[in-house]
Length: 398
Image (tube, rainbow, N blue to C red; front, side, top):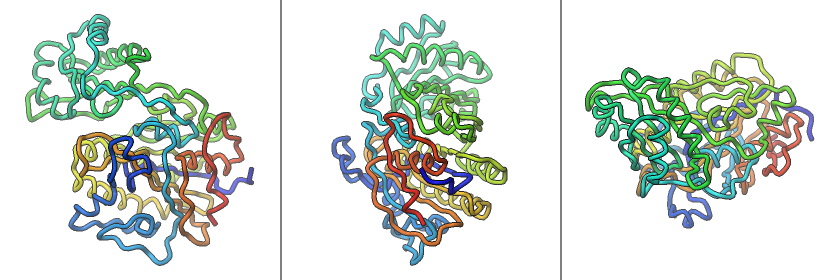
C-alpha cells in the first residue's frame, strides 16, 4: 500500500452517462448504444467546457466538442464485469462487489398475482396499475382513482424495481413508507427479489397537475458482502454520501448522508462539502440524467442537464485543493436515442483530476468498475475486502 496521497476524494456518478457499447452489449440487446455520443449528435449546441478541459472529448469523440491538446485530467473507459446493467450492480462494483446474478425485472408481465395478493392483504390497500409505466404517465392515468378510493398504485419499469405511488395529502407519507417497507420484505424472496422498492410520493388532485415530490425513498437490497465503503468506515475515515448512495448501499459503510432534490442540488451539496474539512470519501450520485432524460428518451433534455452539471463543475473545481482527487464516472448507460426505455450496457468514463497532477492523459482501459474503489482504498492505505475486485489506477496518475 502507498502512503496517503489525497486527503479527500470526491467520486461523482453521472447516473447513466455511458460512452459507447460494451464488448458484450449484444448479449444484452444493446449493440450500437452510445449515450454520450448520440446526445452530442442530437444537440444543436453542446457546451461542456469544464468536462472538455478534463479530457472528456479526448476520451470520446463528440460532434461539437473538440479534444484539448493538454487535458487537465487522466481519463479512460471502464467495463463492467458484473452481470446486469442497473444502478445497484454498477455502484456495488465501483466498491468491489461483482454481481453474478442480475436482479429480476417484471417489465413485460407486471408482478405475479401471488405477490400482489399478499401485498394487498398486508397493506390493506387494493393494488391498481401493476404494469411497466412512466412515473408521470401512470399518475395521469390512475392518481385520481387512487385519491378517490384509497387504492394503491403499484408499477415497475425497465429496472428491477417495485414502485408505489402515494398522494402526500390523501394517502399520507407515513402510510406510503409503511406499505413500501412491507413490499420490501415480500420482495426479498428469491422468486420476487427486485433490486429496489421505491416510494413515489406526489401532490395534486387532477390529471395534468400531478407532480412527484422530493420525498422519494428507496428501499434497496443490502450489499451481499463488504465493500470499500465498509473498509473506509472501519478505519475511522469519513464516508459522505450525496443523492441516492445511502439507499443503494442500504446505509452500509456510510458515516454521513445527504438527500438530493435534483442533480443540480446534488452538485450544490458537493460544493458545500468541498468547503468543509474532512478526511475520506465524498460519494455522489446525480440521478436526473437517468430518471428524467434517459428513461424518457429525451436526448436534448439529457444534453441540457449535462450543461447544467458542467456549470456546477466549474464552481467545484476552484474549491479543490492539492490534496483532493476528483473522479467523474457513470454506473451504466441509458442511450436516449435507443429503442425501449431500458438502461444500455455500455462502457463508462473515468475522469480524474487533481491540482497536484503534473500532466493528464489516457490511462489503460479497465475490465471492471472496481478500479474506482481500488484507487480509493490504495490512497488511504486500506486493504480491499476479501473477494473484492478492481485494481488501483493511483500509481498511473502523475
